[in-house]
Structure formats: structure tokens, C-alpha cells
Length: 355
Image (cartoon, rainbow, N blue to C red; front, side, top):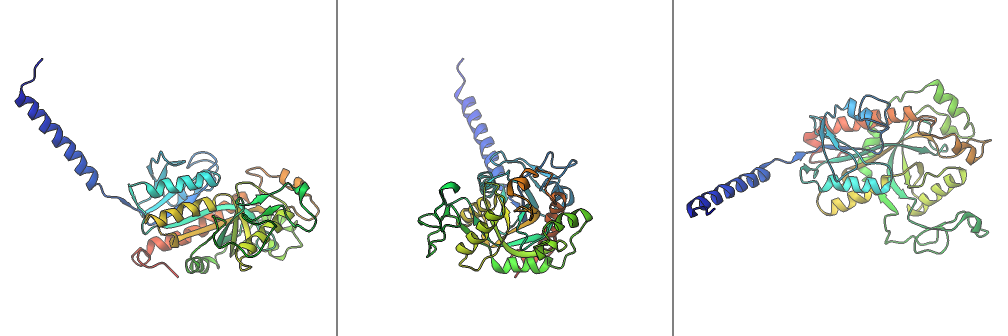
């Protein structure tokens, strides 16, 4: 069948008009302005209505009712009417890095002025914190980027089998200036502001927490009711446990911070998140000076006096941490005080970072 020229020309013009209309619609579509990104790492089941993980309390209490699919990330994201976006990265450094990068590069969102609040649980050092306490991180130290030899091969005089990259013995000086992700330093003025805003909060205590704390009678800070602290977190994809590794975490933190840092709590994903934000900051997609990391104590990172590390580790299971539910509650209530302030004072916080 031969289509007349006039009809072909008409159809071509019609198709061109449709394509131009679609293109204009895409260009004109407003980007979603985000004020705060809340980053959680794991959830037990659904986002709402069942036993909570790190994400559910945020979804329910911040009314993150708008679901936005994000196929390039681990999980869909959620938003509320106030400009708060919640995301679930998945467990581990790799998933966290990939998910945060996926969000940061998604053209639907304007994250140029967004604050980023990591809110998750971890294993606390009983020398510094008690169960269900909260720690605002000054530094995020990586516990994976290193050389390692088997514990059975550690030479006499070495305190650990971990050796910094490009070094030949543990804690060899000087610390390299060209680090490859071993340490991230957060904006000290923003961290200080978040700590001062929340440090006097009354965190719920319980008889269960008190009994669990009693096992650590040799550690005065471990016996205290839950409180808000400011310190450093060590991030590792390996769930480590025991007093010897607790000592390594403290020494590793002091090494990379030039003796200024104080390890208080362990985590898994934070270096992945910070690496993604570092790249996004360089690309002009995010402002890393607006990042905060909050970790709350679901368990101690070592065995109680009188136990062995294997005995202590054997007692763990996702819901068998000494303060699992209490730490989830602390992460949301303490973190949300910061989130609410940022939203309610957005006219100031959009242009000026609190300090």
C-alpha cells in the first residue's frame, strides 16, 4: 500500500509534536527537593506494621508515606510532606555505598542542600558507653582496608595481626597522608551542634537494661543509664567481637586520628556511606559537610568479665542483643530531634549549617 506524501508528512509532523511535547514535559518536571535524608541499614520485614528494624520507627513516626521506587538501589525510598526522605541501604559496606550513590545520582531529586543522618545500631565499648546509649561520630574509621596475617602467625611483640596498608608492622609511623578510605572526618561544628542539641535527652531505661549492665561492673560508664555521647565509630563488614578486638579498635582509631580519636562503637556500613557522599560531594550532587552519623548501643562489643569471647558471641542473634529494641528506639528518638530541628528551621538551615 502506498501512503500519499501529504499523509506521510502529516503523520511525521504529528509524531514530532508528540515527541517534543513529551520532552518538554520531562524537562519541566520539577525535581523533588529533599531537606533531610535518614539512612537506615536493615529492616526485619515490612516497612511498617511488624517487628521493627532500623527503618520502621522512622517510617511510622515521620509519616514517610510516599513510596518512590528506586530500582538502582537496595530498596525503594520514602518521603513525607516535610521534605524528609528515608532510605534503606541494605547490610554491608558495598550495599550502603551503592544505594547512597544510586540516590545521589537519581535526577528526580535535588539533594544539593540536604542533610544526611545515618541512624543505626552497633556494638559499644563498655569503657565509654552503656547499653542503649547514643554516639555522634566525629570520625568514621575503616576496619577492612588493611593487611592481615593469621592470628597463629603473629610475631612476638605484635599486639595484632592487622597492619595498615603500605606499612610493614602494626601502627607504623608516620601515618600515610594519602589514605584510601581508612578514615572520614565529619564536620566538627555540625557534630558538635547535634551533640549539644541532644545531650540532655532522657533516654528510656529499664530493669532489663540494668541487669545486663551489671555484668560489666568493672566499667563505670557501662553501668550508667543510657546517655548521649560524642566519639568515633569503626566500620567493618566483618562482625568482630571480644576484648582483644575491642583493644584493636581503640588502637586502630587512635592511629588514624593521630591520637585524637576515641573509639566508642562499631558499625558495618558507615565507611561505604561516607565514600559515596565523598564522591557525590565532588560531583556537586551532595554536601558532605551536612552529614551526620549516629550509632546506638545494642550490645557490648566484647565479652563480660568471667566469660570467653566465643561464649559471648554464641549468645548473639538478631533479637538477642542485650538492648536491641532499646537501641532502635534511641536511634529514632535522638536522631529525630535533629531531623525535626532542621525541618522546622529550614529557612535558616537551608543556607547555613548549624554550628
